[in-house]
Structures are given as C-alpha cells and as structure tokens.
Image (cartoon, rainbow, N blue to C red; front, side):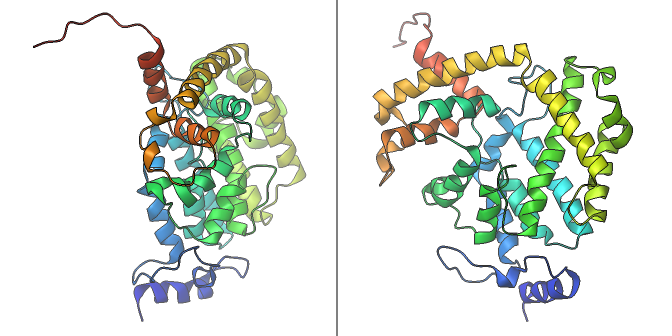
Length: 329
C-alpha cells in the first residue's frame, strides 16, 4: 500500500461523512497516473503554489493601491490569511484540509492589478464582462503554462464559486467562501486603522462588543461560532459581522480618496486596453496562443495577469515621454 493510499484510507477513518474524500474525486479533465505520496487534492495545492499566477499575487493590491509601507496586505497575504482561517474551520468540522487549502490558495488567482478597481475597469472594457472568480478558473484550465493546471473538479468548483452570491458543491468550498469574508473584513479593518483612515472609536460599538476589540479576537469569535454551529453563524454574530462589513463599505471601500484612485486605475487600464487591442501582436507570446476566443479576451487575459507595478511601468513606457539618450557606439 502506498503512502497516498494510506492517507486516503485514514481520511475515511478521521473525517466527517460530509467531507470530500480524495479517493472519491470526480477527477480531472485529463487523467493522470496517481502519485505514490500525495492525494489528488495535495497535488492540486502544490500545482497552485508553484504557479506563476500565485507568485504574482505578492504584487497585486488588496485594498490600498501602491502602499508606502510594508505592512499593508497584498493579494498574496490575503490569500494566506484565508487559507489559515479556512483550515482552522475545516479542522474543527473534520473536513478535508487539503482540499480547503488548495481552494484557498487558488481562489484569487484571477484578480487583476489594483484589486477590485482593476476588476471593475475590465468589466466595463470587455464586452463579455469580467469576474475574477471566472478568470481564476480560466487561468487554471487554460492560461497557466499555456495549457492550464488540470486540477480536480472539486478544486475548480471551489475557485469558481467562492464569491458571496455563489455556493460551492463541497463543504470545503463553502468553508473557503466564508473564510474569505472573515479574512478581508478583519484585515481590511486592520489596514484602514494603520492608514489612519479610521480609528478604533469609529468601529460600530455593538459589533465590537459582540466580536472583540481587535483583529485576533474578532476572527476567533467568528471561527468558533461557525465551528460550534456547523458552518452557520448565530444570529447575533452574523448581525455583528454584517454591521462591520457595511461599515467598511461606507467608511473605507467607498471612501473618497479610494474612489479618486479608482478613477486613475480606470484611466491607466483603459489606455493599456486600447493600445493592446489596436496592437495585439505587442502582447508577449500572443503568436503562440491558439484558438483565442477574441481580441478582447486576449487583451483582458494579458492585463488581468499584470501586477500593479508592471501595469504602471508598462503605462509609463508606452505613454509617457522620456528624455533623449544618444546611442552609445
């Protein structure tokens, strides 16, 4: 018996009957030989971690664009916090942590530069629209390595359906969906406090009383409430979390200075989009992409993959004047 087979057998002994068992996966689009060491979900986690799309998350915005200090969250640190919270919930409910980790680490691969501001820009520019969760699936199915990562059905379902208005098939996917919200509400509060945009006294008093007066206490309350109530919040805790979320939209996400920066993001991405739509041959590797759906999709794929800094540098290179430099002979 291989180590993988032992792990799969142990899952049936340890995990809840609601868990997604690795030996019961619906499989991959292209079948592969089983690994002697790792289950299918463990392999998917490793594929995501080693992908270029995952590495680029370290230079993509969470909320604050181009922060001027090192301690603000990026899309990568957000992803890691989601993974930590989701795995803790999953362990408490005896679900499959490997599947949870794979979905968590891949759930934001499709995010654009400049966070949701970039996403909204591409939504307006592409006639077919743009949603980062749908693009995450496109990355793992097709774009990464030029042929996709060939992930299991359950991981792909979790990536596609991690947003609030969706519902994954597996309980593991549902854990990630909730953990994503827990993570971003609380770490965005922490970043907003660090920026000076809000103060502790601004936070809704009742929500603070129910959940806690700092980031760690609030996450602990939310996670414990979910585990003890089988992946549901008690009414009091849910109301407090919803109140915090509404506060963040009012005071941070829709704050004037944030929206002013979004105007600049739309201008930058709009100019890049127009340029590459007019000159698609300028997109690196474009000549190697077969069966592209449309020029709009080609341009969207390229811009969505950019990091904040790469997008800014590309804009400067294409549209800002440079001093003349005599060629050296």
